[in-house]
Image (cartoon, rainbow over all chains, first blue to last red; front, side):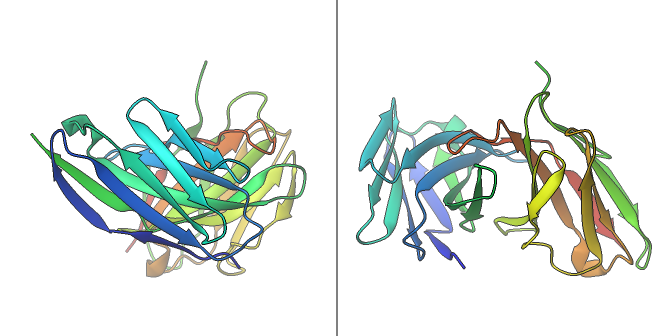
Length: 115
Length: 114
């Protein structure tokens, strides 16, 4: 089955710095890669995603890159703010019967942004 | 509109007891998922429903775990003869069921087995 590795497990930055979280996956059939943000005590929420036919996607301060050949994808957050502090999960997904998808998640990165 | 809801929010049970966890998906969402999140771990897929059928149960860790969905809406995850290693947060998510459709998560049920 799919295996997703996520690094680093903890990332501490100063406000205004950039943060990069990297994930690798094993199944070349994976074709959709969502990223979730989970604040302490709250539910995970989708923040950005990328499909396998796209190499990069950007949404304001957040960007995601995908290298299908190397089977890795990364989340980039620029100009970090204290409210970016949370656990971030990457996922690689496989198609599911009936048209949806099943994600395999990384173990998460705890991002701490110091004011 | 209303998001995904789960009940109870917290459940403490004794080892060996059965528990039922409930998920109410967003109205109209055909796909429903159950995940387990242990302390410091990522989300572990358990089971996926499309309508009332469960075409992928590959994540259920043992035959003590089962789930059903009725009327294409509410789902119940049942854990029989609970063990301490079952302690975790159980999250439910729903989506419109398409290839790229976003999964919306519920707040989770924190299960503690003593």
